Image (cartoon, rainbow, N blue to C red; front, side):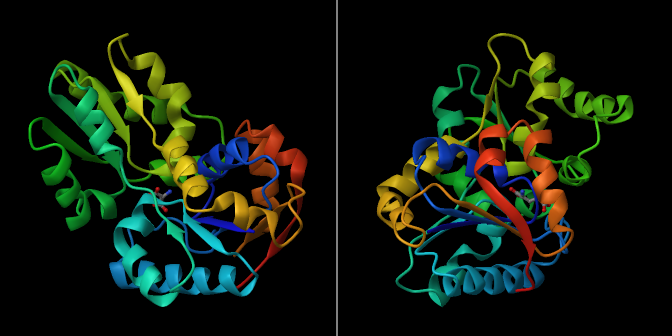
Length: 265
Ligand code: DGL
């Protein structure tokens, strides 16, 4: 079984990409909804959550774990790998490399949580893969929380998103990296702001391909026998996770999920 987790609903965008590549995979998705958002929390706190959740997923028989959260990956993936030796761990990091490679204007932007935006890991990623382009890192406090509410986007929120995106476009940015898995669900309000030559960069599919490379197909066939079961777990209000799937447009996942459980790793 493949275990996938995030602070909340954002990682569902990654789960969806994995489920599309591995339709028979048995999956367990855990949303740490009692502690969302991670993006404004101290590193020690995030690391503690990541280790507890990783341990919990491993104890349930997950033989591959996906950290479907840029903030958790940036802060704690190394600690998790050290803690769970022998279990392949796949993380997600902002798609700085593909964005820098594709940029014609040599100017890209990364939208991220505060924790990811100020992280050394992102600075290193930029220094390694984007030294030849200008990179604007834009912290977006509150955006992940807005996705978590599952409420329709208010005019006020749309205006805030536009106020962050428009100056980037005016400055010549042609690739905008979605550096938080929650932001995949903001595409419907970001996309209409963009001219044709500007693209959003979301690495969810690349993460799913990495899961397959690391043996995801094999892991998926164990556990529940590869029937395409989706177990949903949340650390608070599990029923909201169930409701989130159709509301976020993830109807195929909704169809294969079993009733969400409350867990307390
Ligand atoms: N979805 C997460 C990410 O990719 C974190 C959002 C949050 O909890 O602040 O960074």
